[in-house]
Length: 69
Image (cartoon, rainbow, N blue to C red):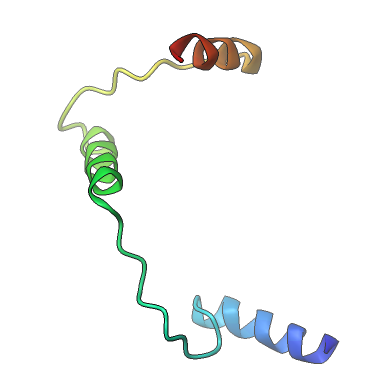
């Protein structure tokens, strides 16, 4: 079992994919996820302003997230 896991993990790294066939279809994002991906990419490219808050202190970030709910 150890040898198989070692070989499978090596193939995973080399192929950047699972080392066996799968009947599952490739991942397809739903509409909400697709919009979030497009928005993030547009901000990354500078097409729209990135107005997301930045935090140096994790406690402040958590407080901010808790206040958003």
